[in-house]
Length: 320
View (cartoon, rainbow, N blue to C red):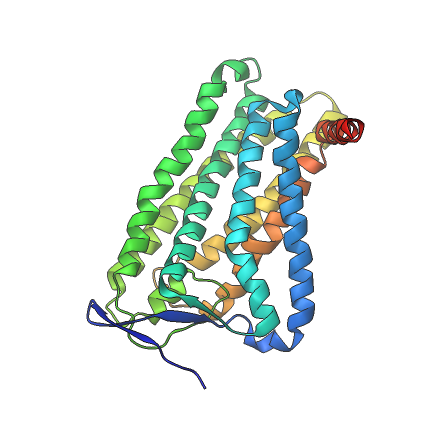
């Protein structure tokens, strides 16, 4: 029997619930143990792959370049991002629905959305870095110096923080006086807005505008950067160089398409209560699939990274 727990304090026009219940995937819960194993392996592989990138970038001086600096930051982002939601998803697969306290739910929502927003801004920065490296190679060392790299990463955090904080605070101030079952596997803002018994029209519009601005700004910068990169690649004299460059770009664009496509589907809609059921499947792409693909696509296919990894492992073996 479902127990409804309520706090005695009032917020807005209703009594807030003390905890929420994450519904997960009830239609396939009978496959819980199998799904737990699959997602656990994907999670461990993702964490291991991204951790390897961060480790070897720090350990090997040859990888102390702007490109690998941004990649190591992005990999650290991915570790934090996926760790925000996947452990709870694994618990849901094992035991069915999972409860989460009211404060913990909003902390999870804030961390998830903040890291997601900062991550997309970082993708735009990484695209600009590749544009300068490929299209303006002579000016690259001057433009992308260490100070510029740190400023760009700091800007990603600094721009995302006030916007996301304001949005989460606005959602937090809504009244939650009715159902406490979240039709998702983590505390995202759209299902939280859906559960509120307040007038959510202004909150939904704010969420829509912020998602539109962050995603489209990042997407436009990325498209412009890669369009110029493609034009530069086409002008390369060697067919072998063209093939190698196009192979790398196509791999990057596949991952970017998955990330942008799923997030646009989830967040860029004025009415946040629409398509909540399908949002769960789309969210799996960002929280499970792309963090797993990123290490493979961005660096683990790179010969320079392979060499650095082999030498790092060799040094570790010698030190023993």
